Length: 115
Image (cartoon, rainbow, N blue to C red; front, top):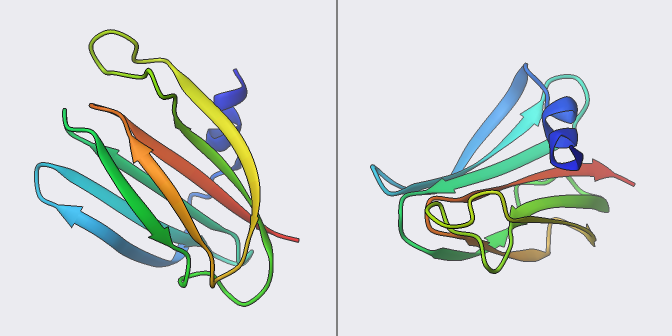
């Protein structure tokens, strides 16, 4: 149930959206800013291919954030292990980059809370 915390936290009304990486029918990575709070959320999804990105965080407003990362576990795969995930927390700024890997048929979600 811990992975559902992202669903509980994510906003439903946005003031800004940015599409960071995308290839139609293959993958997408987007970041959105919650209206009225300044909190950012980012997520990505891929097709049956393993994909890795160095996620630049220059879309964040100035300051320091706690990033809560909900990501595919190393052994995740849509066919044999679709529910394998890991949750981690890291302190980031707009100058930071975060490595993200999406398992085949997987994805990730990140919430950024200003600290």
